[in-house]
Length: 311
Image 1 (cartoon, rainbow, N blue to C red):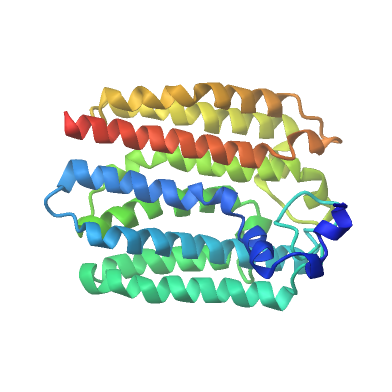
Image 2 (image 1 turned 60 degrees about the horizontal axis):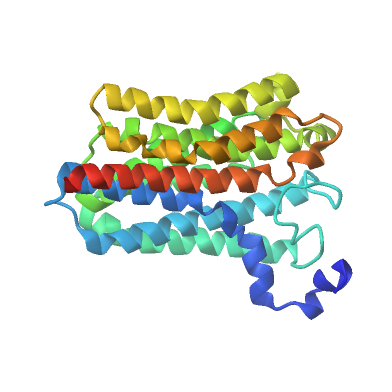
């Protein structure tokens, strides 16, 4: 089947098109922190953990993530960041598969559903989790929406680290246990680094196009050489932070299982090391590959924490 027919809304199911819009390949960014928080809850506060709230927390996280993806899709399209010749986004708008209003409305609905479902957590855990949830909602919506547009002023990396690292892990832990244990913030750092690496791979690939759209990302500000260094820092920083956490007895040596994910990490590092500023297509799939590494790393870290609890 030709590419034209594949992208023709008349020949594709709406379900398939919406799945494309949701960008599920990146869901590891919201799922892994919740799983990690669950393993930490088991370790630090197993008796006080309400496991019936786990699926609620997980669904809320995915709904907020979906809302952020769709709203970002809409504003990137409206601000001409995403065009037919760019690599970013799910491409449902630039290829005419959905209408902009449909995508924006779907994003708002996803946020609303996540908020409504999150009221269950507020009922059980109080206003602290409401505050964390509102921070996540506001950050996710205004990542590309006015008046803040964090992505366009080179604050996207920092915001994504906060939202999908410390905030989500702490929020999920609070939802499960009712406890604000700030040690979990430290354990969130490795997965936070790798979530930013997903975004940074995307931004490094899109530097030429973002410059044309007159927006600023951190990758643009530090240039290609600096962008490569940042990617190296995020990837190897995740492994190094695990070692540091072990040395300070915050997590057990079983967490060294994350080093089983070193081969794909090195493969990704090699890919970005060879990229040329004028030929970004060579890292067109690096964000997907980095998301896969994030998932493997996060699962191994969670398994290591689980093993240390069981033995």
